[in-house]
Length: 114
Image (cartoon, rainbow, N blue to C red; front, side, top):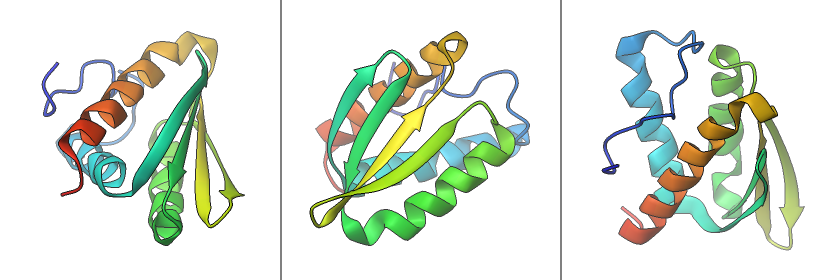
């Protein structure tokens, strides 16, 4: 998978208009590339991202918009020292979507901040 592809990332059940889907993926890529300090795949259905504190408002807004079109996602936020933890959870039937998210986080980290 190249960085610009999103197999598994956008499920068929997503209600976001098709033309807007690449823009949403780009928003997540920007968050992953600029604000993720670390991550832990806690389970097949949970991914914890440690974000810079200044990214919290953007991450919360992005998460809320994502739940609006893909209601199977669950996002929670917590503090970790001076940083923020963004917890992403999906049902077991959507673990492949979280696999794709994890791949994008890994790819963004490899590319570094933009």
